[in-house]
Amino acid sequence: MSMAHRPSDETLAAFAGGHLDEGLALVVAAHLELDGESRRRMREFMAIQGELLDRIEPIPMAAGYPAEELEPHSAIATPTASPAIAADVPAVLRPYALGPWRPIGLRIAMRRVEVPGADSRVFMLRAGPGIALPPHKHTGFEWTTILAGAYEHQYGRYVVGDFDEADTEHDHTPAVDPVEGCTCLVAMTGKVLLQGWLGRLLQPLVRF
Figure 1 (cartoon, helix red, strand yellow):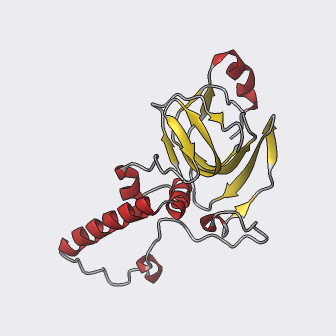
Figure 2: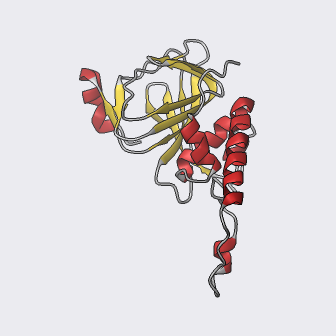
């Protein structure tokens, strides 16, 4: 397993501090479940943040402050448990409600992941071996953790556990592994803008 692609320091620090959108945080958490090096880096960020908090002079809470506001917040919201989730789904996804797999193209399927409180759209994407997706770019973030198989594009090859952190600066043309196919977890903000003549034909069909 090659872990060549990991979240940026800024992303891990935001995750450690609980500052990410719930959907984006879930994709980071799925990567952390698979990559020990990123877990080690995150613990370092948490230690630094804890040390900074220790240096801050405490301020007394105002009288009558709501007790529920004093509860610690995790980086990911605690959702309602979802029944009958397959054992091969990452542990971080098992508490969430997953929709059925639905075809969105030739040998491409998607299933929604319901993440309470998320502004991003979260879904699992499964593509058959050798699928080439149209060139596209984004008006927001597209964060991806590879759960099975692999794909590659202009920025490298991404295998199980890798984290693909794309934004408005990244135009790419993903090509799925010709033998293994690919299954991944994606959180997306903004829109997908398909490029080229084929992309323009398919753009009205894009709903994720």
